[in-house]
Image 1 (cartoon, rainbow, N blue to C red):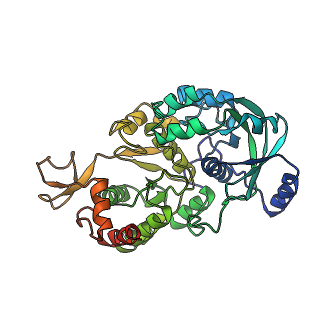
Image 2: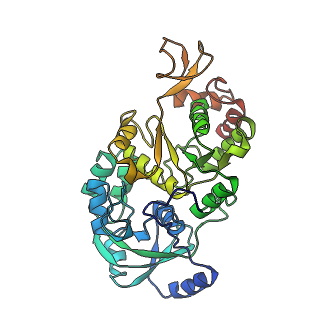
Image 3: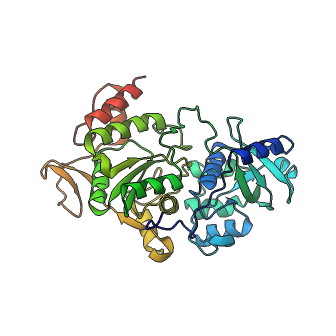
Length: 393
């Protein structure tokens, strides 16, 4: 991997065991207390196991939890002092915690019932939700999907290293995407094979419309390669399913991108909708995957009206670039200008009343449901056709 950017904290973590180790852990797990993970926890466990959450080797303890909430820094271990914006916790009920005392081992099962890992319980501590919610989400409003998720979680956190038996806990599921489910070690190997020294990542949980395509192509002018890296872990109800989005990405790349300079892989993390802090987490994850640049656009990882349009970009401005280790590419809102006959931003073309093609999400959904394509200035027709088929099922 010589020449590629270092993982966050300096070393790419690997907590996934080999075949022999998996068999031994499965045998051990049969006699251990069983903990069934939530969808978010299962995603987090996979991200720890493959090194996407480097330098974490397990679920966080109290010192890390409190310092991350208050200062966006890790407190302990090889990552002590490193930037980290969101707690990665295993919150369980008091009854479950009683079955897994400190010093014991616990078997962690995915929601599908598959054994995912065995954990050494190094610590137990109270889940301080009144600290986590306002620190991470800037609100305690239970209508916020991330806040609600935290409030619904258990009151006790188990901390400790994990040994991951199975990386993809549901390999036959509709969102497994095994051909695209590359680990950080695998994306780094592919970047090296392609000769890419600078790689920009584009985070998305939506189909890519023309404005997003424009950001990606500007980044391609700067970097050797582009990694389109959609999040396919848990999202909120109402988001376009990952399987549908993947079809959109494939058809877009096939028709409108240079394949030798573009790569599609999936990121199996869970969406938290934490706005600015989640934007920072998304950048560190892509650093672990080997990317040197990261696109930060309008309302990154936002939901509703909880965050300002460019709050995520402002948070990056507050972080020492050397401690972040990946370069954010900050973009203004972009749209198609009829007068300019192309994509523009406030930096590149004057604002003219009624000139830009902007559609609300509601308007787009209404068009798709009627079998009508949005204007080609907003969405590529091939992408629109995939979404029409989905909307009319």
